[in-house]
Length: 209
Image (cartoon, rainbow, N blue to C red; front, side, top):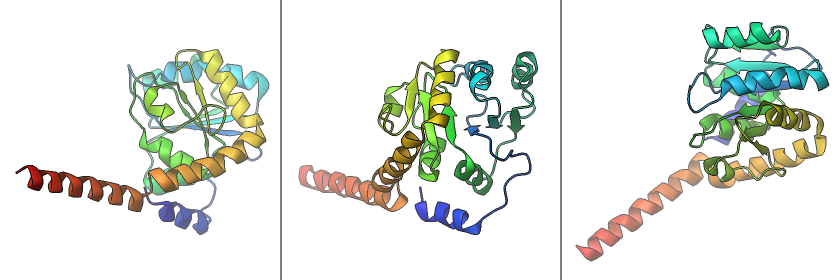
């Protein structure tokens, strides 16, 4: 990913989306609807538990507008005043949301490395994710994010509350995650690694051939 593009969006000072509430913790879930891997039902079940502690918290979910399951969970749980369902966002609007959000949530039990996780880390969101091997490559729980049982609503809720309230963890994770993205995922770094891999492969083929 290109960190400069994120800086450019940040420097544009784009207006806040109209639905955002001021002085409210902002939690973003951009994973859409992926049955069997991303447990959105667990995410929604965690929200009433979070609201018991943080009644003003606002949850923004991209890629879920018009999804019957999402509407069912929101209405059944009575959380419509705290949840905004959005369509999928273009890159600029999504990063604009990440730059304003306090917490990124991805509750999955089967996953690779979501692009949105890396983007959120680069934008300063504190990640709350399912504890998976692929995610542990990027997140050390308690240092630059929080990893939880992705099928336990209470565990997810506790992590979201902790992420919103722990200002020291927020500041620490911003610095760590920025550096992690700069050294492991920034576009120029990745290009050099890919070029180096193919160069070594070609040299080996020439030597063996």
